[in-house]
Length: 375
Image (cartoon, helix red, strand yellow):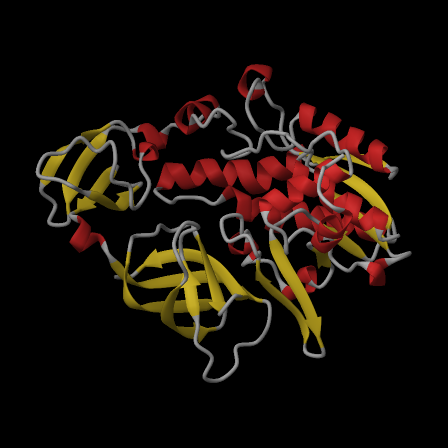
């Protein structure tokens, strides 16, 4: 139990009284965020069912001593937490789905010069789709997750906002989630700072209260992307080729475009630097670099766009085309499911395959996948 006052603990809890008696699927990852999410819903009187998605076969040596997501240890922790708070637990085998929709596109992108975003694809194609299907089968109204994202409903519909903890905000990874899916997803910890989540975990005496947090791609807990790609059979991404400037002048050589991502500036081993990677050509195996002042971008084409609500006239739009960047002012031109972004000021490079998220202040408007960097 925590040593904080009852008043402070109560101040951390969201008002979930309207969910009393409502059946909800709790997406259990085995981590502290989803554990607290489930405990809050249970305490509020919701009819909570814990579901863990088994997406990948982890090697024991890869997860030993490291944070992970969805490993066998995580499944065990998720089950134990469900037992602690007194809710049923189900383990869904999603390995084929995960390989088809996350692993195979991940490998293909690094073979062809794109930079994938596996967390976005997992949310869009695996987690939400599968969990909402499970919700239908179990006659549940909602799916709840431990994402640091806030949801507020009004007469005009569902609105999604950045999490209050800006260091943990995960709205960027939900930018491609459609409004029909979002209408059935709850985020009970999105208002919390991470420290507050851990305090509540101690209050509920959850076994995950002090669990180490995963920082790497979930299916590469060691962080060794190159070894993973080679082990999974990637070949064309490891063809040797040239490093050239934008005029085609050869500056050096490399052992495969899979070693690089757009915007990369470390590990290039080139003279007359600094340099940034500005293009990767899967056909010619060329890595194109430019000096920082020449690597900045203004225009990006975005495809596979989904909107959480309609854009209103005269709204000021900002966009993120990398997770770590601050949303920047821009103009957007919509043509069907393709959006062209023109930033008001030059930005650091992004890469095809990355998410573009659109915001109005702190509200997530929608987003898509970067298909081209135009300038």
